[in-house]
Length: 395
Image (cartoon, rainbow, N blue to C red; front, side):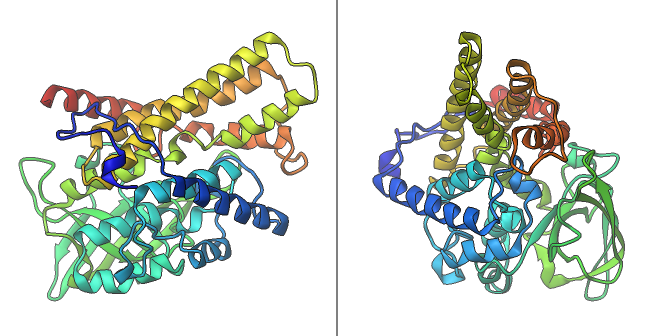
């Protein structure tokens, strides 16, 4: 994708979404990913389940994606990436999520950790981490939320105290996805007291197997172990693992959240359930009302997709579309919940998590049990609307 394919955006207002026309190369790339997903489906790794970016942890699948250059796509080639930009990455992850592919092992590394280390890391950090991320050999978690902070990141209580040769971290991070299986976490901690609660925060790269790291499972309603409480009980972190400048943590995480909040995972988590609904309706005589509701869902999906693509294009063009990303997440995650409700409404089916894998009752149960998290993860809708309001007021 080149800037010439976008509508002119000399100044990006908080509600400006570049109009994106994907190039011909995107069609070819999409076909490659679909063929790969078919191969993996035949192999038994692509199960077509909802929420595969959270629940589908398969390091072997991630490494096979990496071998095709589909992990770290937006990272420069000198650091082992593919140097292809955010829109090419968008096409790949859109297809993998639509297929319900198990991408969660490399998800945070590819989406957030890699771009953040590229932008804020030292040259030594880039040389060490980025090639491993692009090879699907190094997996990250994010340590932002805390028990009494929730989405209010500025109230972070985890502290980093200066030591002779580094930092000692003490505190507890909540809802840390994949911390029990991943290698590192990027942790936000308070390094200095300041009157402004947004000041005095810094980010650290923490080895999740280091002494003093204690990981406690937080189970979903389904019984799955995806999230954790990560207790940092005096964890020593060397100076070389400070990410970015001391005290710049707030600026770094808010920029990072544009990657986290705007992608296809914010409206495609329940897409496999929509596909399942269509297959079910094909087998019977669908009523006009059922078709109308499917049409409404499809129209909303298309609209959010265009906005999400606009954010990817803005990132490609070097903008920091924080407000737009918050808007996409609010609209997208509400759509995900509405999709589950609509499917239940127009085709009443008993949800059954023990039904045949891939069957409509099993997919419905999976989506239903995951649904409380859709609007919570990555920032609650209330927090997002505050960000959107402030963005509009400042423009």
